[in-house]
Image (cartoon, rainbow, N blue to C red; front, top):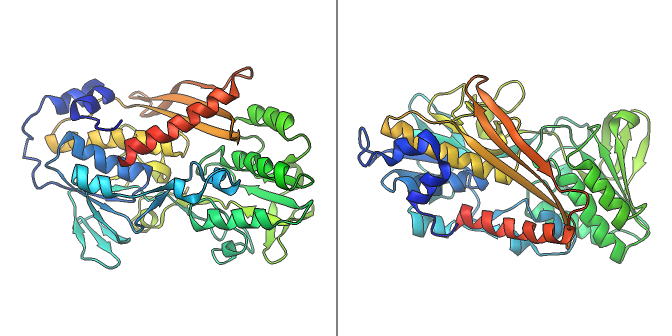
Length: 423
C-alpha cells in the first residue's frame, strides 16, 4: 500500500461515495482552510489522517496523540512469549508528517466544545475544527471487579494496551516458578480483540512448553463461547495437550473479587491461586468520548454505520474500538477499514455530496506458535433498509488447512496493514 494514490483510494472505496468525490475538482465552498482534527493515533486515527490527505491535500488535518510511539496490540502476545521484542511493535508518525503533510500534535485531548467546535488540550492551545474524528480506543472499567483497579495493574497486568504492560507480563512469565499456574481472566463481550486472550494462552503455552513444561494455564472466561473456539481447542490438543484449561464462569460462578498481592481469584463457587495472574478488565470507549457525551448507556459510541458520524453529536465522527459497529469486532483491521469509509464521508460533506453505501472487511489472525496460525474473516455491508451494517459473508480457517501457510499470511497481513496505516 506504499504510495497509495488518490485515484487508487477512490477505486478501492468504490460506489457512489467515490464517484461523488472524484467527479469534483473544485469543492463546493473550497476545501482550503477546512480543518479536520483527529484524536488518537492508532489504527483508526492514523489511517484516517493519511487518507483524507490522499483524497484532498488542501484539507488541514491535525492528529492529536499523547505518545510519540504507537505500540500495536497485534503482535504483543508474541512479545509476551519471547518470540519477538517490543521494538517490533513500535511505529512513529514521521511519515505522516513528512510525506502526507499531517500536523501531529503530541498532547492529550481533555475536553471538546461541540458548539464552538474546539478541542481543549492538556498542554497546548485549543484547536478549532470543522470536522472532528474521535479514535480514542478503549478505557477500562476499573470499578467492575472488586480489588482490581489501575494501581493494581502494576502488580497484576492486563497487558491489553501494548507497551510497558506487555513487558511486565513477559517478565512475570519468565520468573514463574517451575510447575506454576498462569491464570487469564477473559472479559464478556464486547471488548478489544475477541480472539486475543486465547492467542495469548496459546503463545504462553509455547513458551512454557520449552522453558517450564510442568506448568499450566487456566482461562477463566466470562463467556460461554469464544472466537475461533473449535480451532483453538484443536490446536491446544495437538500442540499443548493437558496444558491449557478453559473454564466458563457459567460453571464457576462470577468473579467476585481479586486478591492482588496473593494473586488470588475469588469466584462465587471457589478460590483460585495463580503464580502469574493476567486480568483483562471489562472495557468502554476512551475517556474523551465519554466526557463529551458521545457514549450511550453501554459505554460505547453509537454512530451512523454508513459514515461513522456520531448519532449523538453532529460533525463528530467515531471510529475504531470506541464506536458501536456491530457486527464488526473491535480490531485493528476494523479500525483501519472504518477509517477509510469515514475519511471519504468527511470529504463528501466538505464537497457537499452525499455518501454511497459502505462496504468493509475484517480479518483476524491468531498464532498458536510461530509457525501455526488460524484466522477469521468477514465482509460487511451497510443495509439502507435496516440502517445498520450486516455480515455479507464470513469464514474461518478450515480444519484441514495448512497452519504454516496461515502463519505466513499473518506475518504478511501485519506488514501490509502497518504500511497502509503509517507509511
